[in-house]
Length: 294
Image 1 (spheres, rainbow, N blue to C red):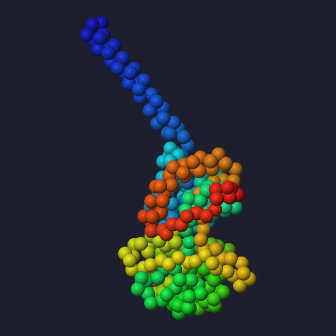
Image 2: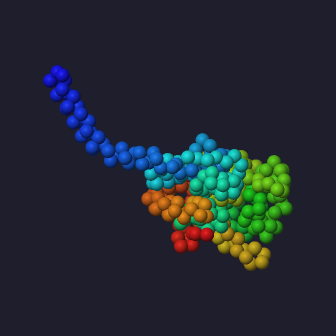
């Protein structure tokens, strides 16, 4: 064998061994992440602005931040039906691992500590002459075509103040007059806000995370006024309008719950930034972590 070739061969082998020694831990860490099963996120395919198949929903963005904090790839498992079905049809059947946004204490799942709190809002034109700050505001009775989700807390209060019948046809028009019998009908929040912007409706009442994006996109033409959390039914029972928001996993997956809790703590600053960018008026959660398991 040529001595020069023999020397070069030995030198290359020595160099390769040294590189393998130093690269080993990094490669091992990389391989560990690639070997880790992806975090399968239950997601609505057309649940704007929360989740969209284009991954432009703000909960899609939060899911990716969570995945980074857990050092796991994120894989969205899409549901074409309304997101209300993802727990029953995807999570409970082990087709996905986690739901990004649920009410804290949702009895269908184990919920994390709340990572933000938000309330309902009145959406109006910024230059509206109607002063609406609560359901008992006199100007709410003067408003034309008040939009809201049927069956929700806003409807309860509209009934209490005698405004349900007046707005019945308009609210039905938001679902194209489809019957809600034996099916869940979701009103597109962009439609409700768009109608306020165009003048077709004087006010919309909605959960802030569902409409904040569209109010922000109006460049100041629309405003949100928070619904106070001091509302009661005829019988004196409270009607809640502000809710802590958590992530949910299967009832038997306490291991994943603990892992998500740890990652949430690390990811909080980035998640808060996403919520603020979305235009959501974020409130401090009220429920203590010890109350989140259900």
